[in-house]
Length: 471
Image 1 (cartoon, rainbow, N blue to C red):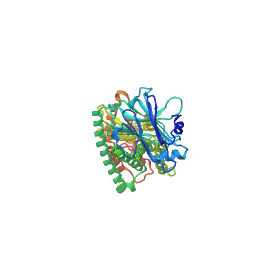
Image 2 (image 1 turned 45 degrees about the vertical axis):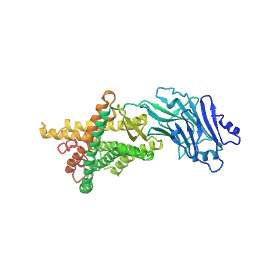
Image 3 (image 1 turned 90 degrees about the vertical axis):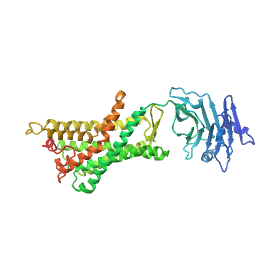
Image 4 (image 1 turned 120 degrees about the vertical axis):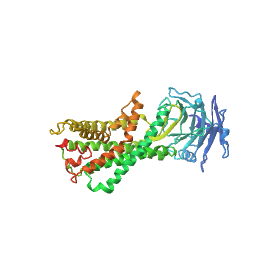
């Protein structure tokens, strides 16, 4: 590739010529100094490389390379005078992650650095039998003595039996064919999808009813704890809504819309975690009778609850960590969604974020349990059946209120992974329902004075046990 520029001088009056060196074949063409145009190159099954005229049949070529007019113009402005497309056969993958399609790579050179194109360079492979493998367009970053293959700058468009790499820069390109990972069995996937869809829909209904009641009926009488709970409801409602619409957005094939969808769902998930944390902080203040007459108390809670996840999501957007994610099953089917494809980023951000929330909320849960169960009023010598039921309801409400059920999704591995998915899905499917009941019962007992400890903790304990932790 380094000597291609020297070949331009040998073209003379010709505008294009073929390149051949052993099994390596290609074509080179001069760029017009004015009125640049797009360039199309076809590769036959015999690896003959040709410059194509405006009218050609795609079926005559197994590979097609389309260089947009933008790239030609950028090359001329940067003293580039030619465009060359070269096919290199016999390229092997050095690790066991997969093999390159046709064991080949395609090099594109224009005598100048070309990057950040708004209209991509397209490399299309027609009628390819993938044999059940996953196709990923790769490019060589050109750094170091050894090839460093990456997916950066290239999108993979795999449909109708053809694979198209859409890349915004020039370098060497290849398609990595990787074995299909079996993330989950098809039966488990169908069951979890069904449960999740029904559960999210049901949760949204009850959360919407609670929000309706709060806005039109109880807003003026709401305590601080109820207002914090309503923010949790808003975060959970938008999380369920974004989850249910995620796959539909992903199937549109619009990368910008997918990134927006992934960022929205991630923000609402982190916001839900954050409001679990806010609930725990508010409950902690009241359990230990700490003063809640902090200046602009609720304003600070609101800023922390909605602002903290925004900082994380903006950082991931800036580093371009949102993309398509494909979930594969053991029968070869798959489902696409918009999320964080990098497992390390997903685990570091989401599990790390939730771990902090879980640690604090779990401590508050244990402390509250101690207040409810152990430190009962001295005059209560024996629990009757009604008291046990109400305390049990309070415990269930606290588990959901503090988001402890999410631990099943993040902290289970190995043979317990699939069972934990079922437990998490079922519990969170009823989360909206239980929190609605909890909100309804607790809001009935809230007093008009929201600055008192009993009122500000009305969503944390039931009617029977509400006063016992604070006396």
